[in-house]
Length: 323
Image (cartoon, rainbow, N blue to C red; front, top):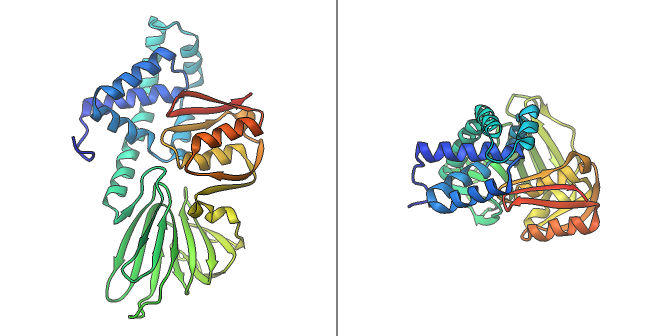
């Protein structure tokens, strides 16, 4: 079956049910095995599961917060296969608005990526040459539309993160990058743009970029070595750019006394599935340079350098907890 074939309503509902249970954080070992068998039984099952676990980590974290604490406690205390446990599972399925919302978001997110001119999957990073000779690097889970015509060169960043090295244009057409919040006009430069949750982050490594909020706020020139955030309220004051901003182009995450929770949120962008941080260790700090292409090695490094333990329910459900 082709990877972009439609997923049936029955399989969709089964995937949502499994996703809702997984988000509860209370899956038993036998249920994890049942989930694995369900995924392996049919390629359509696996595609449906990947659609859900492949949505942005921030949404997964917000969805997890919807789980009813009382229902979770009852689920943890109920015996396997008991009537009480089945009743609580039905309650969580009622909260399956969570799963349905996740599916709807994955549908939109997946479709955006598939329809974009340039796109990357989870963990993928690619370099492309644009029609005018400019170069673009796409980070994990990114999607970009390319709109070059006789009058202008336009890139629309749908989601994710890009690094761009602009080339001189023989036709002298203006170059523009649009995000949900910003209009960015490079002035002979190399720069990176990240579409965040409700904001755009711009970092300039060479030259200058003119940044304007799409809400209509005034233009601000961002110089080399500086970064700025843009949201619906306008363009913030520039701050000195961190080397960590563009480290992904070299295949690394750089942490500079970063909170563990923030580090895992960043690492989670490059991993399929769910990577969670126990609140008890969320404020631990770490520094270092970590290779993006070996996520398991990074998790092992955390266990050696911090008082934490990596708890893997499945390869797609990992929580970092106190040691």
